[in-house]
Length: 238
Picture 1 (spheres, one colour):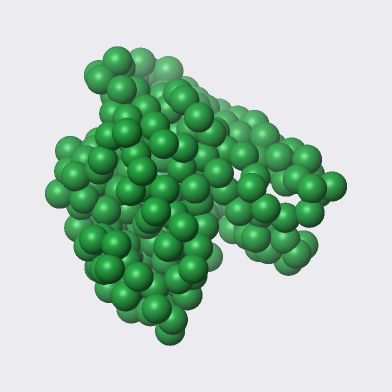
Picture 2 (cartoon, rainbow, N blue to C red):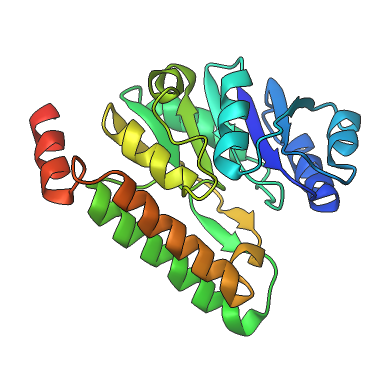
């Protein structure tokens, strides 16, 4: 089982994330930190924690995440971000999810905010709920959430050549949802919610950037994935 963490100039939060991974009840077989051209000590901190460091000079989460997935040697690939804090059972929960449901090819879990203004956390929570509803309607199934996802390695290999890894303005987890959802069923990781940062949504320009990337990714998949067309194909496949 492999854990992938894309990182760019987030050394201190990466240290916290790696410490939480070190306290898992079921240790990952490997932790891969993709150093996305960081100018700080991210790579050094990753190596000192025993992680495997994979360099990715092409700036952008889509490229960095894909480089990590490509490098993974485990049968299951788990993904979280450098500013995440997983619960102690996160790896075990993901493994159990796939053991219980051999028909799923990917799964995603919930999240909770661990920083940011308390008065605004409910607003950010609404964003997460809105993403699930809007993206789910467009996809016709549960969307993957990049801070808490897992997939079978062979499922990744089946879509690795068609994901939009070279476009930094792609909403990479939504793009992955389009591709994986077309070839298999996406389930849910049960257990504790992932601790995530509000930083990508605060200040407001971060929120706007995410929304813009989300809509852009939806448009990238049209007209072939126009919702009624996609829904009909998924029904025919099931």
